[in-house]
Image 1: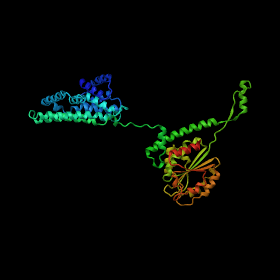
Image 2: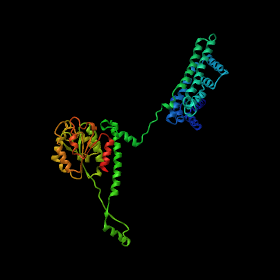
Image 3: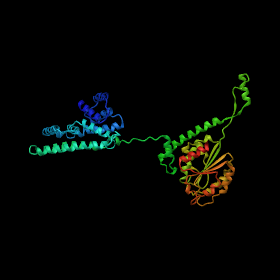
Image 4: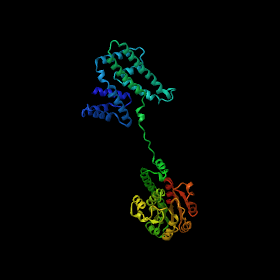
Length: 460
């Protein structure tokens, strides 16, 4: 068994598999602990010691199958004395050829169950194409080198056929058939190895994208086109963006919190230094935080944008004095408490399914604005930023743009985020042309990149 394993190791090294002496010794020690007649255990021990990477495993599997299966598939045939003697005679005849080339010798060794020389030639052929700058060999080297090998295989096949033809009157047809099948099977294996694709090339190398590129590609996908898996990835992305924004805001607040000099505290501290004001104490300046009121259309594809908007706003809630949220279709419902009492993703699901509005009704922006004017107009003041998320499609009902004008007068600014593409803003039942005149800013919000840009400008 040791001789067989050593022969396999020699063939593996010839094929380019790196196997050290210590690994061979470890393999022999481990084979004593398993049943070598159990191929599953035997191959597992060899693989564990000789294959150290994904590429090595692919090459090992190929060599193992070649050495322990393909080269021994006709052992019952070669066990026959007449067949073995004539195969040996054929190989001796081929070896006596005065015009024999190294490729011919490698083929003859391969027929004699010694693939080492043939595998070495194949490895040289596979690496020939990498030797740039050597004329023809730089581009066609591996192809040119295959021709002599192919000629040697066909030359050997013709020599075998000629020998069997000469032995027609000496050998019975069964023996000639077995010899021809055995040697032709070996030559077919040699030809397949010559023309096959390098097993290492079959292994795809995964491309690792850096985080910024991954974020950029994910951020370009429209919210309405996200798969469930991409939605989960989007939540992770939003979490990291929120952390970055919070860090930036905290640094800015730290830089801006120093106000005017506090004379009393400075003089009191100077008493420690005999009246010399070595330490200047300044009054703390509280950060200026704005108030945000959000009106979200939760009909159809609009909700896919609104839920990510609400997710980011409530994750950044400490950057604002207050965030009040309202959802609408035909009517209005405040959902601020839902976000305050539940985890953000759970709150979004509750808003989508349990809010006190008619989810199946047609969208009516005019009715929504009337409801807001009647019950919530006092929430707006000069520190309030009003954000409206919707496509402006009001099913040809009265848009009530006058109420939006009143809201503009009461708040600091109105920003409209439209999840539709700009060319569709003024088509069909869209009232964006009427509403746009009363907004300080109207911008598309179809994907994460656009939403992130808006949130960054809003917070910073």
